[in-house]
Length: 281
Image 1 (cartoon, rainbow, N blue to C red):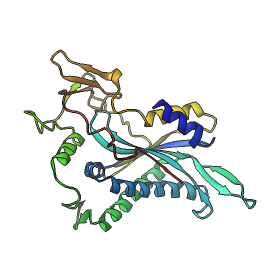
Image 2: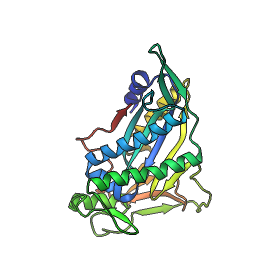
Image 3: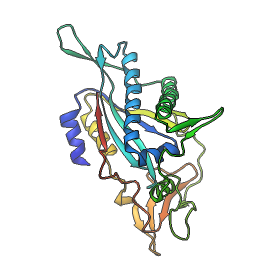
Image 4: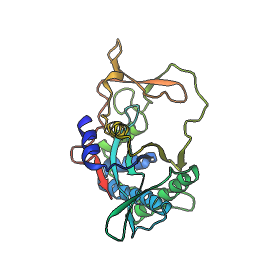
């Protein structure tokens, strides 16, 4: 984690401002991405182009005259150790424009407004949906759209993935039941989603950034997106041998821990055949 972060800061990112964009997708797409990484790769390209186009237009240029860039870390795990394929994208917070003499000039772009986040979050499902439909992976009727029956094989692995995504026990006598949780705090009604665009199960957040002179903050961001699935500091065993895991941030209903039997864990780890990092410009 530390070595990856240092490499990104020292060798990849220029000394320009960087903003983190985090995209979460609906449950069905999480299963699709976990089982079909090639589809996920194409969708990630769509997401990059949407955000890059937003930055370029906001800077007052076109794709022919300017470029931006990003490093994406594909995370497969959620805060409760569930399978949750989502994207952490570290975008340059602006664009490079070529001067007449061939040199490059960086143009900083202001943080996205709530309205801009809402528009982006509305555009993403449409563009992703059109791509999936062209690939025969999405079907539509008069009111709804849903993944085609053959979008992925409904084998044992997909059943395990589906259980992990939906916080359910996959095997054993408790199969199908929700994972046991501990609620040690009162429920909180205050919103946690200020500055987040949410549409049809898609969620886009862009509230964290590092200025050009904040290289240590950028390195912390890089460490955060490249962190392992499990934090050993928050992991413990109960007297009866079950695994207890403390959430980094309590849920709104007051949940602070999740409980597992020791054999239930693995779907959130990156597959050995895939690359977790993607760089684009």
